Every structure is written in C-alpha cells, then in structure tokens.
Image 1: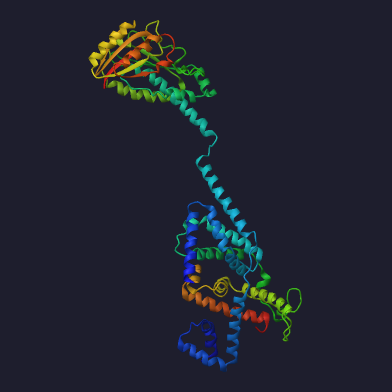
Image 2: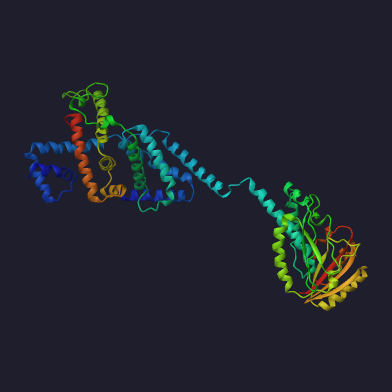
Length: 202
Length: 322
C-alpha cells in the first residue's frame, strides 16, 4: 500500500510542477483523480448534494490559485482535503439548515419525512424493503452526522468514512495527535446517541 | 471499575488503543455489564454504519466545470497583466512617434551645428527615422507659429554654432532642413539663432552641453565663420571625413583633387590633429570627390551623397589619422 501511495504521490508531483510552470491543463489530471474523494468529503460535511458540488468547485479553484505555493511538504491529497474542508465549513456558516440540527424527539424518530414509519417493526421484511431501509438508514446516518459540531464532524468523517490514519488527519486539520483522537472519540459517542435516538435500536 | 470510566474508554478500546492492562480490564467488565455492553455494541454499530455509507457519485459535469473555471481564471490573469503593463495600449504608439519626432528635429539641429567643429557624426539612421515620422497636426501648428528668436552674443575667438530654423515638411525626406533660412551671419561675429519652439527645451539642453564642449576647444579663425557665399546652398554642408595614415600627404592630395574638380574658394584649416579643407563644388563634383577620396583611405560622408540634391555646396573635408 505504501508503494502505491508513494507512486501516486510522485505522479501527482509531476502534474503539480507542470501546473506551477503555467500548464493549466495539467491541473485537470489532479481534478479527475480527486474530485470524487473531495466531493464525498464535502457532501458528508454539508449533507447537501448541490452545495457539495459548489464547494468542490471552489476548493479546486482555490487550489489552482495557490498551486505555486504548494511545496510538497504534504501530499496533494492532504493539502486538497484541507482546502475542501475549509470551504465546506465556510459554506456551512452560510447555510442554515436548521431543521436538521434540532434535536429529534422520540416521536419524530419514528417517522420519515413523508410520514411513513422510519423503520420496520421488529419482524424483518423482504429485501426490497431492506433496500428502502438502507436508503433511509443512510439518510438517518447523514442526519446524525449533520447534528455534530463541525470539528467533531470533520474528524469523524476523515477517520470512519475516509479511513485515514491519525497522522494524516492531524496533518489535514493541523491539530496534534491527542486532539485528533479525543475529537474522534467524542464524535463517535455523540453519533451513537443521535443514532440511537433517531433509529431506536441500532 | 466504574461504568463511567469504562464508557469513556470504549472508543479507544474499539480502536485497539488501550494498553494491555487497560484492555484486560474492559474485557473483563463487558460480559458482566449489560449497559456497557450495549454501549460498546452501539459504538461498534455506529462505526460500521459510517463505514458502510455509500460513496456518492459527484455530478458528471463537475470536473469539466472546474476546468472551465480554471481556464477562465488563467485567462483573466493573463489579460490582467497586460492591462497592468500596457494601460495606454492604443495611445502608446502615438506617444512614441511624438518622442521620435522631437528627437529627430533636435538631431537635425544638432547636425547643422556639427560641421563647424570636430567630427561628431549625426547618426545616419536618420533616414530611417524620417521615414517613421508622421506629420501630426500638433507639430504643423507649432511650426507655423513664429519662432522665438534666441540671440546669443558671441565673443571673438569663441566658436559659435550656426543654427537654422527647423521647419519639417511632410513629404520631403530631407525637408527638415528645408525652408527659409533667416539666419545671417554678421561680419562682426555676432550671430542670431532661431529654434523651432517645440524643440526649444531639448535643443537648449543640447546647446548647453555643446557650449561646454566648445569652451574647451581651440579658437577658430574668423575665416571659418564666414558666411556662406551667395551662390552656395546655405543649409547643407556636406561632410567628408577621411582617415589617412599620413595626414600631410593626404592633405596635399585632397587639395589637388579639389583643384582638379574646379573647387572654388578653397580653405584650409588646422584644428588640432585634424586637417580641414573646405571648398565650393557642385553636387556632381562632390560625388566625384568622394569617389576619388575613397582611394586615400576610409571615408565617411554625411549625408549620403546619393541623396545630395542639385546645386552647389560648400563641402567640408576633414582629414584625421587612422
């Protein structure tokens, strides 16, 4: 895995340095490589598909503008993730999706947005329903994520969704190792509670 | 071991971050504690749910849109720089022409002054500059105004540059020196000068410098300052500079040639290390003269004799050592 990562990093540098010399098209390669990952990070941070699209565009544009300052002290992904998260957080401040952040009452927990029951009665049903459930479940999880404070949210996303190491997370968020861990643990704890509230039995 | 303590460490436990001793404690606690077990399971499940979240596909146009903005950004940067450095993009050429024009005019005046002193050449790319020159309404208006006379007292023994009024004409390439010459030299040595007003400043500077140059040079016999003979062209004084090994010999040869060609009013002047001969000759003869002088050594002529107009001129030949 380390070999692959190294190679990828090296490849990135080729295009980065071309871009630094004025080759704008070289940047396109980096966009192709990382747009999906960045989009997912943005999406999980914001919880909104359209907004995520905007954020990613702006993040890449910022990266392009700042490309000459990129020294290669970190990998491109790390740098890019950092930029994306910053843009996402700025965006969040502007958006007020209040309804998602209000604590969900036990009654509400049982209802989906259209009024149908949020989860099945104890007896498991057929897979079609399970699919529905899955979708609902994912939405529920996202809602739970949305309820977290930003610094916990980002730590959790990077650890449990992107599966990055503590080191990398520390580099991206520019926080020490201990802080990374404590944020992740607290985030998970809060998520657990939220999910429990939203879904009943996990 | 309190449940609270256990609870706090469940995440670390889950991650395998506890020390072996701590791990053992939790291991032992969990089976016997429903609450903590439940918490642990929930934690585990939450982590799983996160992991199981589908990777979302970005919109298909996302990369393309990003690159479109990137390219636009690059373009904007490029055009911004252009605007920064060439804000008067359209006007610049006109200004440049104006400057060239002024420079040309000043140079022409300078050139007329020269022949009286040791050989500094006016550059011959003058012809090219004239080609660039355009008649602007501005300049035409100025030259139509009466020039401000600039009189300079000239004590005997000091060299006095002769200057003519500059009146540029559109089509005549050599026309800078054409036109009326109100300039008359007086026997007493006093001379009046007139300068085209738009050049006053520039030529003032030039003159100031020249005056300083002149001060340091040897006095010239009054004969050199004699006015141009009536018949000769008074504006143009063709100049030939000859570089010869043996100046004395060359001088003799030049004199012979001048006589041969029918040169009139031959003058001989010595200025330091330069021998000067002046004679009056018609233009065809002057051309011939320059051909003959080529045989003596390297020569330089000013202006190019192919462009010499018809008429009789006082030609000045300077002989210097190589």
